[in-house]
Image 1 (cartoon, rainbow, N blue to C red):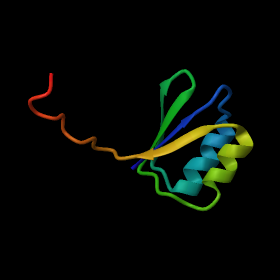
Image 2 (image 1 turned 180 degrees about the horizontal axis):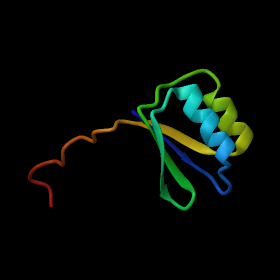
Image 3 (image 1 turned 90 degrees about the vertical axis):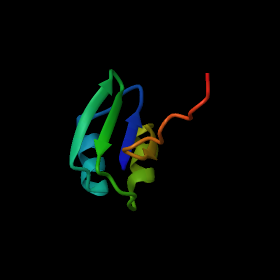
Image 4 (image 1 turned 45 degrees about the vertical axis):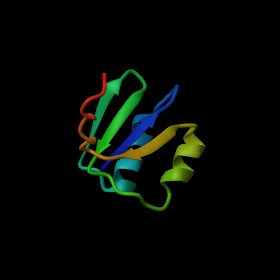
Length: 72
């Protein structure tokens, strides 16, 4: 699962702490203020740290569902 983090000012120290809390295998920057933590798992402290740092966050599956067939 990915832990997606975004915010106006994402501190490196906060990302490292979130990776440690979630057990993430790696941190990837996907846009200037957006980061993806790979192989992350929900854990105590993530919501609190993100609130403290004013970061938006969400867990999303690593493999998105296949596109719907027949849609245009």
